[in-house]
Image: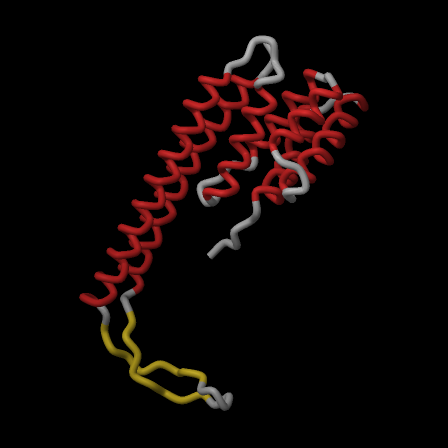
Length: 199
């Protein structure tokens, strides 16, 4: 199973990708580094959304604001926990309120859609886990398998196992759910990023 990364780690990885894909001159690279520093303090809870707002208001730099919002949005994932999600949303909306023409209501709607998608994904994932457990219970066969004991010895023991075809089918179902949900999330993330973009 993949290790779950924090919103901060995801944001920093994606910041590097944004830099590689979009940044062309030194000014862009400097802005990216500045945004990363500001958001690092925010993700590490050294400042709250009001302080983030004040910091960016003092800098009075629309490009920096939008880049900061995009980096926050990029930190959204299927496994983003409720606390991280709330913090990302608050940060994006705080920065959005600095703009003369704010799209806060659209941003809120898209965050609600992301939350619904995460909930649906978690629900489907739990259903599949339950199916896997049921399949294992109903279709498992008892086989002799080598098992390591506490003292380091290997002994043969009767263990339930599931056939490879069933295991592969269930694994494929989980992978498909992950891929489809990730694709839908990426579409919502792209929409959010386009909404916060300066027109």
